[in-house]
Image 1 (spheres, one colour):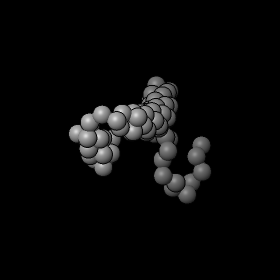
Image 2 (cartoon, rainbow, N blue to C red):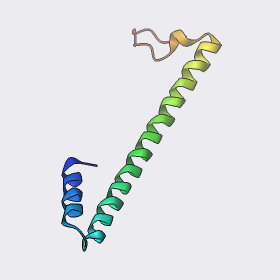
Image 3 (tube, rainbow, N blue to C red):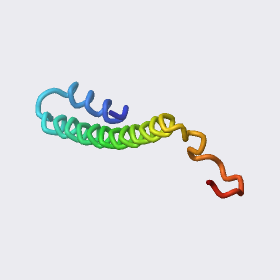
Image 4 (cartoon, helix red, strand yellow):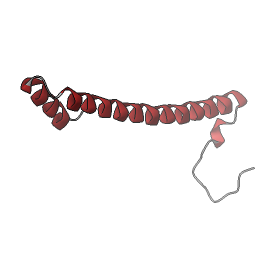
Length: 77
């Protein structure tokens, strides 16, 4: 939760009763943001796992030396 939002929430809590709906709205917005970050991280993890699988497969097959090698001007093969 951004510091600005934490401060806003703290001010609302300190103000006492009558602003619970606004506090709830802040928490729900924060939850939405966290879920979006989790989804983004999950996508990143899936890509990392895919790349790990490619590396493992190439190492097991003995062809890791051709794994995204810089172009040398000579066609592979």
